[in-house]
Length: 212
Image (cartoon, rainbow, N blue to C red; front, side, top):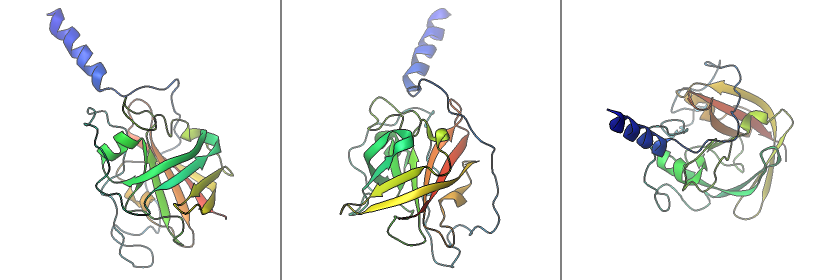
């Protein structure tokens, strides 16, 4: 009787991601927003393709590591610096699947924008934890510490620098895809992770606006 129970506990430990030193706090869930574009369409009426779902911590069991990314294209790599998170010049590749995120630890949703496109929303998802093979572990573990006025820096493949200033943060449900859409009149960057640890039932999103 006790042997099967011990075996189940061992198997459970093998699929649970690495835990950080402390938990991440969450803010009030914001389930709806007025005047957001419907899926497949921006506020200006242009076609917009989103990645199918928001990415998040995977507690159903680790996927096999995959080399490369089937969605990565030329110019899809960015370098991210976030002083508040102690991230400096971190390579951010493009991707769209849970396996991509589990491998990288941080990625740009490949159907979202890029900083040099005016009116875009560069949507970057990052694990709060990660697996043994994850390239950048704990990428957004401290995302809840970001405050209005904090700066986010992005460099493209040619070394051009884009500076964003944080102006908002929100907690939404996994199905609230509108957070990946552009916002009229602004060029944005959105950093997203999953909260709270260990359930990861919601998504914490920190938004910054391009200022230089």
